Length: 444
Image (cartoon, rainbow, N blue to C red; front, side):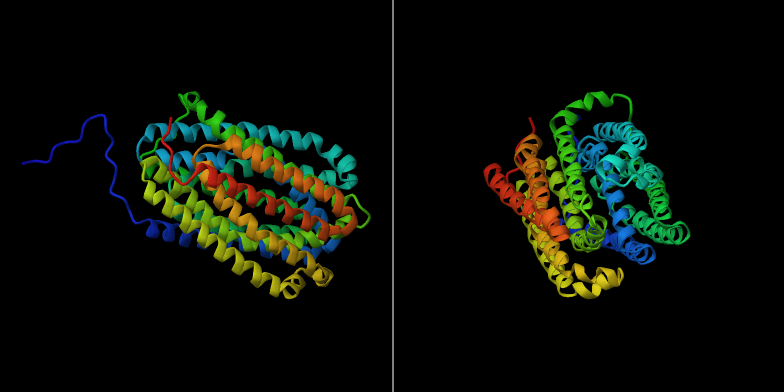
C-alpha cells in the first residue's frame, strides 16, 4: 500500500542530523574563515603599528573604538536576532523566515545610515571636546562609512549563521581578509593614519558585497524568500528580543568607548592607548575560537528549541560550554606566556605592555564562558532580564572602574576594569541560567 500522506496542516520535519557532525562542520568552516578574517586584522594592526608608531597607533585604536561604539548602537542586535529566528523557523515556516530576514535588512539600512550621518556631523565635537584631539576629526569623518557597512554586515553574517551556511561565511571571510590586509597595509604606507582608516572602509565595502551575494544565494538554495512585504507582522520580535538586545548594545559599546576615553584624556594617554590596543588585538585573537564556537552553538541551540527537542537542546549547551572553556583557557595561557615576543611584533615601543596583556588574557575566560552561558537566556527570549541584570551592571562596572583606575594606572588600570566587569558578568549569567533551567520552554 502507498504511504499515507501527512496532514495538510503539518510541515514534515526532516530526520535529525547528528549534532556533533553539524557542530564540527560549522566549526571547521568558521575556523577556516576566521584564520583569514582575524589573521588579517592581527597582521594589519602589526603593520600599521610599525609604520606609524605607538602614539599614532593609539589614535587609530581610539578611532576604531569610536566606530565600533556607533556601529554597536546602530546594529540594534539584528545579527543575533537573525541568527536566532532564522535557525528556529527555517525548517517549519519558510515564509516567516523570509519576512524576518526582510525586517532585519530594512532596520539595519535605516539605523546604519542614521548612525553614519550622526558620526559625520558630530566628528568635530567628538574630537575636540571628548578626545581633546581636534586633529582627529578628519580621520573620524573619513572612516564614517565603516559604520553603515559594518551594521549591514552584522545582519548578513547573522542570517547566514541561522541558515547554517558556514561555508559561505568562511569563503567570504577568506576573500575579505586578504583584501583587508592588502588595503590597510598599502593605504597606511601611502597616507599614514588617514590611509589606515580609508583601508578600513574599503575592506568593509568588500565584506558587504561578498556577504550580500552569499546570503542571496544561500536563501535561494534553502527556499527561503527574503520578503519585505508584511514585515511589520513580525514586530513582536523587535519588542521582545531585538529591542532589549539593542539597548544592551546601546549600553555596551558606549561604555567601552567612555572607558577608553578616560585613558586617552590623561597626559601620555594615546601612548598608553597604543599599549592597550596592541594587547587588545591579542585578546581578540584568543577570543576568536570561543566566539566562533558560540556562533555555531547559537544556531544549533535555537534550531533545537524550534523543533522542541529537549535532549539535544541540553547536549548543545553543555558541549558548547565545555569546548568554550577549554579553548579559551588554552589560548589565554599560550598568549600570556609568549606575550613579550608577540608584543615585539608591534614594535620595540610595545614591549612594556606585557603586564597589560596578562591582565587582558585573564578576562578572556570569564568573557567566553559568560557569552556561552547567556545563550540559554537568549534562546528563551529573556532579553529584558538580560539587559537589566547582565548588560547594565557590566557596563556600569567597567565605566566606574575605568574612571577610577585608568588615570592612576594607565593601560593596566583599564585592563583590570575590563577584566573585573566580565568576572561580575559571569557570576550573574550562571545565577540566571540556574534559575531559568535547561528546558526549551514552549513558545507562547
